Amino acid sequence: MKKIVNPSDRKKLSTEQQNINSHQIDKLPISEILHIINNEDQIIAQKINQALPQIEKAVNVAEKVIRSGGKIFYIGAGTSGRLGVLDSTEMPPTFSVPRKLFQGIIAGGREALVRSIEGAEDNPEDAITDLKKTGFKKSDFLLGIASSGATPYVISALEYAKNIGSKTAYLICNPKPLIPVKVDVIISIDVGAEIITGSTRMKSGTATKMVLNMISTTLMIRLGKVYGNLMVDLQVVNNKLLDRGSRIIEELTGLNYDSSKEKLAEADGSVKTAVVMTLKKCTKNEAEEMIEDNDGLLRKIIGNK
Image (cartoon, rainbow, N blue to C red; front, side):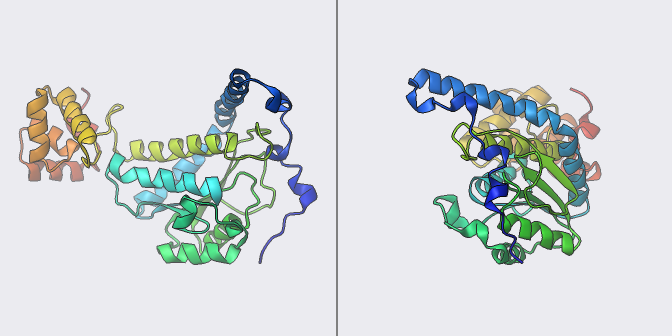
């Protein structure tokens, strides 16, 4: 059933208020406009800091889902949906995870990534259809993203996920959801009034991207995709990543750059495998077996470097 937001309630959202710091922004020179935008953006990190316990709870829930064989889904409309797709798309090349481990769903489908699909966010039935198309099931985790906490498409998705027994979280950029919905975790980042009234692609969008970065990156660290602060599970899909992978091997093993590049080729582009082959003086197959036996955690195999 579609839930309608009363206009008198919507106008109470903090993101719909007029920002007193930008009230006369159209009269200002470029330098002052930029100064105001920059000052407002600096508030976001402080607000996220206040929500760290909720973000930690969401990460804990998501980690258990992944370790149990489930997948991570983001769902949103407009800017929120695009940011979810962006974050999920970056996971495979950065951390060599399966393409479907992280999936982003946006109201209006792929076309909505490059142009606004008017009214897509107001169709709750589409959310259920879109989730089912991905193969979403009880064992998966759904993070709904909606600045207002009132997007029918997102609410419908979260209710469906909860009804089938999935773990859920809700990322909003207001003090509380405008329309209540039952989820396991609510992450509320109260960014306050936008610089341009109601333009949630600004502070809300920035806050959303920062939180998604924190969630996905922390999950990958927990799953052994990082050694120290090095991305030891990157996919060598271009020259930049070939160079980065070679330098990581160089740093961890003491090989020179050219030898590191050769070892990376021997390991079929796997930095982690190349490092183990070098330090443990073993074959590729032996290295891969060691990595599997140690849950992908390089530190368990090579210790501290």
